[in-house]
Amino acid sequence: MMDIESCTELNEFPQMLPPPPGTFVDREELIQHVGDFAVSQGYVVTIKQSKRDRVVVLGCDRGGVYRNRRKPADESSAERTRRRKTGSRLTNCPFEAVGKKDDGLWILTIKNGTHNHEPIKDISEHPSARRFTEREIVLIKEMTEAGLKPRQILKRLRQNNPDLLSTPKHVYNVKAKLRQGNMTVRNFKSLRPQKSAVRNNYLAVTEPSWRQRNPPRVPNLIGGRFVDSQSFVSIDVLNPATQQVISQVPLTTNEEFKAAVFAAKRAFPLWRNTPIATRQRIMFKFQELIHRDIDKLAMNITAEHGKTLKDAYGDVLRGLEEVEHACGLATLQMGEFVSNVSNGIDTYSIREPLGVCAGICPFDFPAMIPLWMFPLAVTCGNTFILKPSEKDPGAAVMLAELAVEAGLPNGVLNIVHGSNEIVNAICDDDDIKAISFVGPNVAGTYIYARASAKGKRIQSNVGAKNHAVVMPDASMDATLNALVAAGFGAAGQKCMALSTVIFVGGLNPWEDKLVEHAKAIKVNAGTEPDADLGPVISKQVKEQICKLIQTGVDTGAKLVLDGRNIVVPAYEHGSFVGPTILSNVATNMECYKVSLTVF
Image (tube, rainbow, N blue to C red):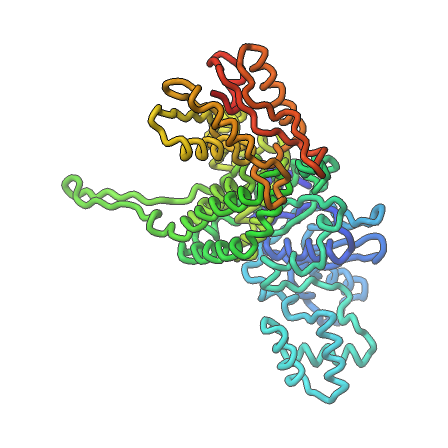
């Protein structure tokens, strides 16, 4: 893929983004992907060359016609052929994409991603919009044999496709071709744009390639299309309760990241000028769809993160509150006006979107934190690049699918996956104007420094060390219930987890009761109905927790309750750590400095 900046220098026309490269199960899915993406960018693709079982070459159909079709009296046959080719649609634009079959899969590469013409402002005006699909051609043949006339045929075709722009003359021409035995009608098949292609045609494919893999590969979302990355490197997403591979997360390539940023940049001018009422309506629909699919979202969060279903539902519902807030954003976007602050001087302020924004998410709340970020950003008129955690990206992708279904235009929301390289790319890209980050202190400090050096606005929510202070006259039952829920909910894997409790007047009246309440917690896989405490996210995290517990014991802390060696029946390989309590902890101990529950 050519570098985006160099393409702009080569071409005086506004740049149109080539489709992201990817891997597809069959030829039709590849062609559909290129065709749909082209429509979102303002051009139409056509099949230039095809060897059905091996290769397909796609070009840009500018929608032109052959010029000077009349034969001048003094023009030779060779000159006429040259003039005809010069005026054809296919030789006018250098864009070319190639799909080749390799080892059972179709691989898309971009041979030339540039165009030498302006984007088509209204795709419906392109000649390909007046062409018939193969299915419509078959129907025309059947209705012709039944004795129907062109106007009658066209009326019936429009019952199934109200957007059909063909005229009776087009039907008559098809009938003439059919009489000659030509069922394909045209030698070069332009992929007729559909209004629904911009948003929902990816759903029309029975099963996209990234879902047919075993395990499935998490897709990127670029320019309105969910596409499989061309990266050969991926990270396994494991179920923490069983250690089974649920899916694989690709490390997005630099070209794919640039494509996502460019798609967001291209979508911004139109989206910022979309009325706030329209943007709000999309959020209302998005809210409705989240309610509809909340069970699927919760199950995915439990499978990838490990938290109990109750916690997973809470994860989605807390994020849903932000979507509801976005539904009422119109009044919050109002500016201020003050008249006559000085003689003949009025002052006013307006709120404007920044442009392309990005969000970098942690693993602890797979639904809530993405919903903190992109709904508010896009409702304000920005476009967005979201990087979910590579440990549990499924919920973010599901939410993006719902956002597209709700009507979010192509390029307004994009998703890329990866680790440090993608984070660096987000920090360094000049087209990204603002970044929101949630995560640990070290990462937050690094991102803040690197991105702010590029002049970006940074929202960095980092770290937490939460303390509870229990007074001598506190209600024992209410306090114990609150401490256990805050300390062990979601296996302590949340920024608001309670890690330290200070008992004013001493621990003695509380210790036995606290241990009793902690022992009553049922440790099990999050999908089990009686589970109170699920596994931690990975084996590596479990090992880190166990080392910190041992370090605390070695430096003088008292191990009141040890949950390191817990075994859960039927989930023996899970990364479970039972409730653990350390007392007599000093502030210079390593176990105090990190988020373990201590007293």
